[in-house]
Length: 455
Image (cartoon, rainbow, N blue to C red):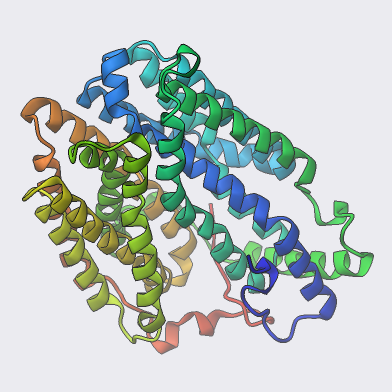
């Protein structure tokens, strides 16, 4: 595997000591953060592979499963901000470690589920335990890296999320093959082993994470001073930026359009995450491991499509037509999934996944450039927090429709309609700022954008 520190060339104009310090952070800390994010994604989505087992062993029907899968996001949303406040107080080494160990303990406890109520409680507690990990890790990078290096770090970090979509199915499927070993069901083994691994990695993180630049033994004094000065300068620039109340953003037209479009994408994304394994099982004659392998197909195709598309859309003067096309692709896939055989349904879901992931890839650069600078930071936070509630709505809706109608077709039609409505929203989203109000017009002395802070 290539060295993360050389994945993207460093910007010119940085002091040599600062460049060396950034490279050491990327090489020493980023692999651990990527591993933690990968496990984070695996532990929150592994529930999608045991729906039938939970129904058979615990009596959890489709509606209860969908509600329980979605309750994770309620706990996550409620405790995300308090968790970030605790991270600032206790430091990343203590708090990120606490988060990971706690969610690992909850995953282990899930192997003892014996009724619907306990299932609901455990999923909610998992959201509470995981709350703050992703934004906390991003905040950790702002404490260690100047703006000029944070894009590289973010790209490396988000690679863990993309990789999780590929490996979750095969790993979880392999663990389910332990069914009957020691007299325990495969799904209990899965929760126990994946939770134990999370706890072990969390404990290891406590030994390797370093909260403050000055505490890093692997940096020279010159490197500590150069990196600390660059980070402090960026923080000072952000402190001088204008503050905007979140409450005023709700009625802002661009924020509303962006939030609606992102909500539609998360509806499709989490529907695929939590219901794809059960759709694949309808093919029949497949082992748990084979179901896991097939469930990785949409993620593999999505990654290929995302990176292929980005090669030319990043140079496009207007991303809106491409966003509209990918949303139509997503809508087409979810509609076609209601037709034909299970194998045809897998191909259709793969098409929907490709459209949804490609849309998200186009969406965030548009959101960053389309919002006025004075509301960019709080606006993006609001879009992300409200949009991610699709993770609650989507599985809950699918579960209810499956129990009441015996089919997920109604859910697929809903996803199709949501994606098509997002196409309309995309027409009115700003594709980029005019030249006179572009980010280049608001840069600091180092050539980095001045970002507003959230009040």
